[in-house]
Image (tube, rainbow, N blue to C red):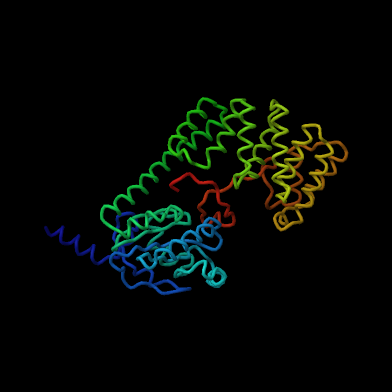
Length: 395
């Protein structure tokens, strides 16, 4: 009995720093932060739903999620939704103040600054095992009822939480079921990628079927389907799949990746190579990255269209002078274009060597190729990235 009483006294005396689903929490830590807009709550209002949305100015996925969070706040604040933007892992309050000021009504909820190593990091993020943002803690009646990506917070979830009772339980179970499916989908996606690297077509097929069953509406499926058809050597279906991708937001990146693959695969039919070249050229009509033009030029050269390849190589050089590519050295692309004018196609190894010469501190270690889009979370180490990748439902 003494042990039981001692445990109770200790629980009451120590602050609740676990911050995982089901944990009891207080708003005390929020009072230790510097507030850019609004002020810290001194207590959780009964029945209200609090969303603590963790973000940073350097985090592209965070910035992409802000309009969604703000829309929820505007719609449900009078019904009991409380949103707090908690800026984390930042190295200066000034840039946060400027960012919030520029967002104006687009970030109308209260915002707090915590800085690196601050109280929120040590008392909320670290105990919860959070290593990437954006990340949202959802609190109701002094308990963390959910932790999730802010894009996973839907209107139906908010309405269920505000209603309470069975509606709340149903809404939370729906989210948790989505999260469980996401874990399984991640495993299937990993299996697909592993099978692709091993050129194990039956395993690719099985993993694709699993993904389709878990999330038939996923925007990732058309991208993987293209890889699957290419792996099978079903070029007619691959060409059809390629055509469907033209309306996808990341079509240019996917087509560029496909173009890079076929420059390294000699047995790809000419008809498919032409389709890829035509699609990528169309995607680049409004501009693109120097590497994209470089890869297109290689595909055009493989098709025997040397004049088009030479013109595209010159576009790569020009792209290094645009805001999109102005951090890319021009010299490697100039040397590539000059080689084509002499009817010589440099190897990827040669291009890599030229890039190393031009930028020894940032040169790639392998052949020139576009980098895959990072996931829709970012860590302090991956801060500069900030590209939003297509998401499976439930993330």
